[in-house]
Length: 225
Image 1 (cartoon, rainbow, N blue to C red):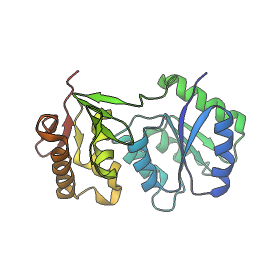
Image 2 (cartoon, rainbow, N blue to C red):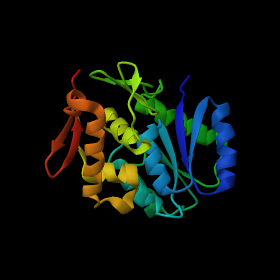
Image 3 (cartoon, helix red, strand yellow):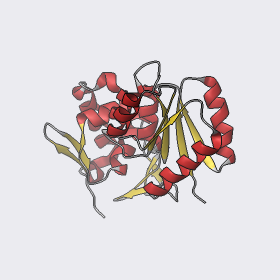
Image 4 (spheres, rainbow, N blue to C red):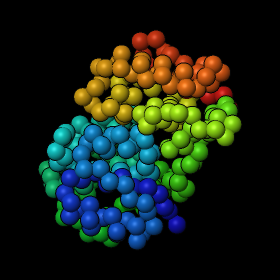
């Protein structure tokens, strides 16, 4: 049975109330975001297996949110929207959506499309709960070194987790800032440098060297596997 975490991005309370128990009954773990900014943060921090994305969000058009998401994640995305114009569908699919379902939709059809998207993505197992890098054990909640939790803030933890999930890959300043602070902060590179510096101090001399600076581009967690 395919399972996984499904992030539902929709500001309509009735949609959230409808989908949450339906997804749970189908064996999935629902996650909730009521706007694009929260959705991007959750996508980075929680690494859902699939995203159900509404286009009519209060803080940002869903098409733009999709483009920001694709800057750092290849998670399957199914658009849920009352917009039935062909141009909207084409734009969404060209921007990286995997499927497009018009509202109102039948629950059975939506779940079938969810299963299909997860099969295509190979998401038959939930993502690893713990990532191991050198002497570090990294989870969404904490980072342990030799069994002792490091005193990281929530933002520092989210930053390290995002780097660890993309180990060996360069994440640009824009990707990191969008994922952790939202699209309004894509130019705040100096802010990101402060957090990287704080994170390195917490990690200590050995582990701090794992975070490589790609000058003028971004950061990369070295793959020591």
